[in-house]
Image 1 (cartoon, rainbow, N blue to C red):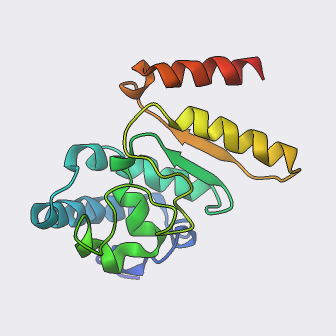
Image 2: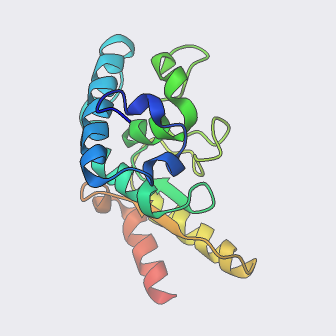
Length: 166
């Protein structure tokens, strides 16, 4: 493979796992450029998405989504996730009528396991999914992606207390 247009070669998270660290860096640059050029036209959440590009690539490198569940606390951090989970070709429709949602939307993709807009809900949702998984005797990982700003929400504190008691 050449050194450009890596994003065009990514159709699912499995494709991420085939890349070396250098190529992942090149892919991250392409993703940032793609997000910026799209948000210039469609509007959207720029900073939050640019800040989680490498985190998203890392998560999808070690997890096996959609079997493993990734719950985004702040829904407007999911653009990289959308790009690498088979929605790149529709990304230009982001936040447009009949286009891609600006947030995770379970009806849009099997990779979006929790519909969320704003913060402080991921830990609670992840705890519920993990409890349901265990009760059903299943085996998969559940990851909550939450930042320091969202940890100030009461629901996040309640969820931390709950999982601490488990």
